[in-house]
Image 1 (cartoon, rainbow, N blue to C red):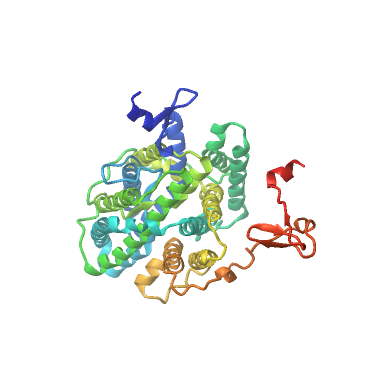
Image 2 (cartoon, one colour):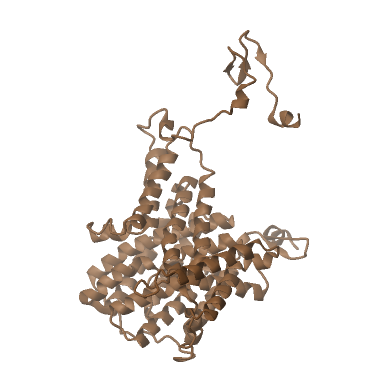
Amino acid sequence: MNMKNAKNAAKTSGGRTAPARPEDERLPIGSTFAYGFQHVLTMYGGIIAVPLIVGQAAGLSPADTGILIAAALFMGGLATLLQTLGLPFFGSQLPLVQGVSFASVATMVAIVTGGGGLPSVFGAVIASAAIGLLIAPVFSKIVRFFPPVVTGTVITTIGLTLMPVAANWAMGGNRKAEDYGSMANIGLAAITLAAVLVLSKVGSATISRLSILLAIVIGTVVAIVTGMANFSKVGNGPIAAFPTPFHFGAPTFEIAAIISMVIVVLVILTETMADILAVGEIVGTKTDSKRIAAGLRADMVSSMFAPVFGSFTQSAFAQNVGLVAVTKIKSRYVVAAGGVILVLLGLLPVMGRVVAAVPTAVLGGAGIVLFGTVAASGIRTLAKVEYRNNMNLIIVATSIGFGMIPIAAPAFYDQFPTWFYTIFHSGISSAAIMAIALNLLFNHLKAGNSENQSVFVAGTGRVIREEDLKCLADGDKFENGKLIDCDGKEVPVEPSGVSDEH
């Protein structure tokens, strides 16, 4: 091995090549696709929700709605491959799953119901993604304004804002169903959650890492036995079908629709950048502005081509960031395998129908662990932040508070202008914008800051234990790093390691 190769890789004791970057690790092909399938199951409910909602708003037939779903899976797979494997200037080469962004749902439904129809939606997506592609490098430059106080806040908020999704899944997913929120659905979610916890405790590393997938299988088997899963419709419909370009007609370009979607694209860029920073933190790899720009470009170019096959804006899926944290599988090739599976699901509707038959409550049980892990990763990052004599605590408190408003009160921004609603109705973008702004205000523009800002850090000041005071005598004082007794003599201070040995 020459010096160049020696820098890029090192041999482990088992003879395998250890990559210079954790995300470049290659696993056996079987494990790669097994872990990749976990990613598909984790995001499947989210990726099919958007075409279902938009299809219903557009009044599409079940067959045409199925085409929208197949297109979403197909384009999500291609976008995931571009993001993970990358091309020059495109793709962050991180374990990020791409799919249809939920941030665009409200805007697309408004365009559809406003008379524009799907062609107007597709035109707005193409035009706004082109604008997003142009501004992506500028967006990536603000990475220096993402210290741990900001990234930790955003990552925590990502996890917390996803918890309602897990709860909705655990209750059955369909609010109009008679059994929504029933003990049967929640019990099925609880069995799946228990399976995740038990399998995670098993000594085998492989079983522990596959705990999410195996728990979903166990939950599905329980659902079949109890009559809560129905696979009878798997055989209905074609086995294989290629998405037809412009099946719903050629895109039309309307200024109002494009402006609305540009606002959505700004939200998507913010969320994807947050996800890139989050997964970079979890993986333990460098995410500089160049890499972020490549990831954002992959997002936008995927969104530009998605309408050709009948799909919508693409973005990184935050729930899969949680799966990376849970399994500790950091390889981008695992997620790329998930992208291949998504493409196949888009080409083989029968496979999609099998996955769709997995009860939503089962996914909810797994989602509680996945999304909670994202929040825990953010808390771990926030633990690295210095809170003494600065404004960092109030930055975290205010930003997380803003991020929770759309979750605690979904109608909070309903009376605001549409552009404002679109941006701040997303808890993730709300927290990110607030954290960046407050970090700039307090930590970069320091003019006017009070000298002693620790008044905002109530409850986090120094605490001295009672036993530490017992060795002190009346009149002792601490000056210039030395302990002086009442007679003015220095009292020797033993290092903590010495005292521990006594």
